[in-house]
Length: 245
Image 1 (cartoon, helix red, strand yellow):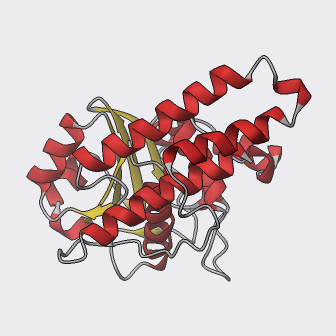
Image 2 (cartoon, helix red, strand yellow):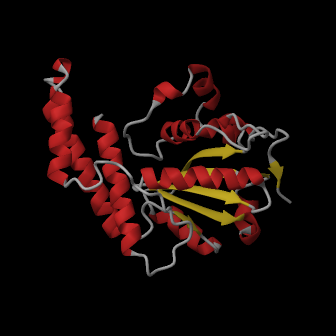
């Protein structure tokens, strides 16, 4: 319950920032309505409700104070991040190699999607990244058209799209080639976002927070592995991946 309230409150902070920027243009704005009954609660009311829910469970007595303190810090950190970084909570389109290189070098955590519009796998991945960007504002999520970055495509030896690179402090920590590891279903053009989120956690490009690990089977998780294994093995060039020339 406390995780749900904290996540709904973070979503509301993003929504408020989106509404405040209604006069500006921003690529891929996430206009998701918040119909939650908690939408009008203040910070203190959110924390009070979290405390009430925790107190109902007798096994969490020793855990209550530390958990409430951490939740309070998380909410404050989210608010600060959304205030300081205009791109926080968004999937940002980057059009130049120079901008992309500077961003990857300067940001603490960055997820970069190399894509092309005509590939349906790229489009579905963008939709999932948009949702994760909203949930994880401390990580930068960006995408760039592979045709606009020939130098980087060659330098990074990218042959198959979609290609998802993860950077922490300017260093590549994960490379996901295609969507096979995420159990992409070509019939529905979809995959479970929990698998993508778990993968990004596994390469430490996302800050630790609540993750619904129970919704992802052990056999599925075992297929994900670590991000750099994908880079070292050259990826899986299955029929659902698109070769980039």
